[in-house]
Image (tube, rainbow, N blue to C red; front, side, top):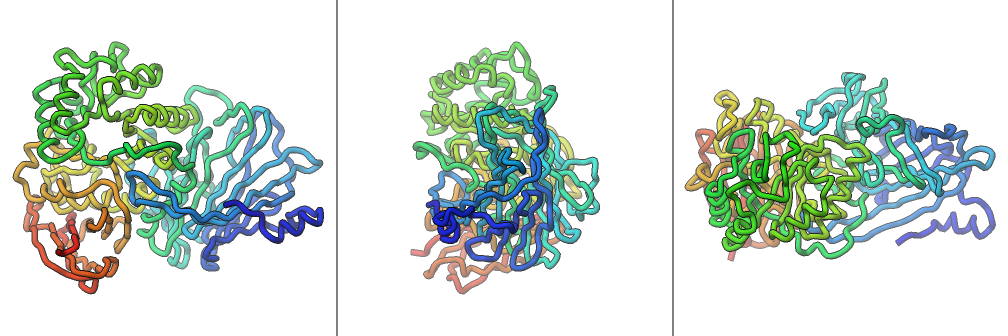
Length: 635
């Protein structure tokens, strides 16, 4: 519901402008957060609970082919108020509360010239703003002047930006960031007092481009991603312009940011019926095999399909190698035809075989093969009975690539196909508009266990507090050849992990991905301790609760599906006992089934007990370890 504030309405009734010669202030519904925009649109600041979080920081756009915007004056202000509950499909909660106070600020150029609009929103869990230019004339944006100046010199969790967004996070102060290196969103920091933790990110990129953050003195400067090979502006619009949202998520503790729906709320809700979207787990034939992908082998595909069926998984993902003329996994060869299966593979017959066992097939494709013939390819897959696609190696976030994501999400939704984007940028909330866009990479995930030692326990404990804040991440958990960091060996075939079996189980609760890989070979699961939990754990949730933990060290996260609660606990380099309060449970008696670390990396100890919300659980976590708990109402 949109409203004009009583003060503004009274001024309009008197024929007076609604703006006053003062900075524009916008507070969150609970009054704790304040966004201030200068009356000349030159700067902004953000405070929470009276403490400055983002100090005075620059605002503005740099246009190409037009004179710079001259001196601006706040001409009018239109306030809005929203409080609604948005039903969600296949994500970390069944619904999202979209509650904010907003304002559209209209600034007029001196001499009655052009107008710049800044749309603002203040939520109880953060703030956001974006620019808008109206009119029928083309707009070309060379750069944004937007920057964020964190108060003090905070310690932040950052990762350098690169094409596939697969770099580890580290903790650095703003003053320690390299000025010639771009940093990915989100950047997660703490205010000087430590009472506010916040994440700087972006949302709703439609029609715009992605961005990274570059240190300029004490500021994090927004730098727009340009289309490769295109000279001139980063963004070209045929008529008017609305930029991406610049957003700052905020909470008392870093882990509480996990619960926030802010990035999704800054995107349009879905249009149409997405009840057909079915989250779930999938077997996968690439992780346990050679780097080049599984060779087209009908018997091998059926072995994975049979495993998915007997495990109760709804999907099997056929990775690189299934299509006619496919070469190595990373190359888009001109002779590849992704509307034909490799010799010896009758795809419609294989789809029927899988369907007879209750399994749907997902297909991997290279984006360069898909983009020029998208409708033909997707129509072919729909005719075959394919349930979804995994698209790989985009490795860009410029305006053209953002448009490709948008076009592909809509095209797959229209054909009732799931979409998993690999080699992807960090989510900006497109999943909210297209729930069939069910997961996304843009994360340094478990596939790198095949190639190097970067998937450390500490890295695994950074991800929930950083990359996962932006949206689902296709980390691809489930490695059951578990080892300690000391004993770990890099293996391209049948790879190991640097964590215990208990942590492998906990990832299925902690890591958000409605389409979740069960990555290892079927032979590594049958009869193995803990696989009973993998079969039971859902991939989409009705509720998510952060219980305890610190970035890079540990986490305890609870998620609910129906009446059943699941807890995932993970720790990095230090063995510890986590005491978990159960006061989030409804009244009554609960049956707890617990899987936790044993004496060696591959051992899991399973136990059961009855308890109530007044009890606590003590979970013994080995170094690089974890635990998983299932809590069901007791009969």
